[in-house]
Length: 218
Image (cartoon, rainbow, N blue to C red; front, side, top):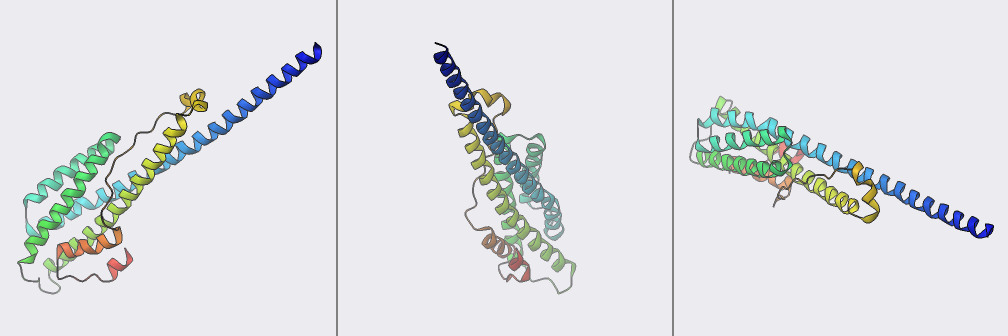
């Protein structure tokens, strides 16, 4: 009888030890998955913030070159909305706000292109030429960052999905209180490669422009 009780006790301890080991492994897996989500979110936020830094000078350069055009108001409104969403950390709105900002920026670039296409090239060394070059530079940078934002959003959302899948498994049930769900940030992928897009962006500003060293480094 004693041997039976000892055998049962040993078996029970072995089973409990096995469960504890599996829980420890699952905790480490969830912890790593949560860290990947946090890192992805930080990278996405940093890329969005980088683009936000460039929007005001792009607006001012456009105003300096062309004056007030309707597309400026649309971009200014979209930028204000995107800033509020990012500052508030509203995951359900950040993606939509950034998509609207992308569209508004492209709309302003198209308006600049339409305005410049029918005008003579500014004299070399003039302020107009300097501002036009600034516009080309800023927009190429904005387009390149848009590629980074799309890539960062894909990385973050993929990690969020994996984290939620692992968190939903039965073995994770006792550990869910330690790991809060992460909210995805939906952002549409770019249809063009960022490197190609940066060159296309320069052509949008001026169709006669031929990308030089700047676009090669992007």
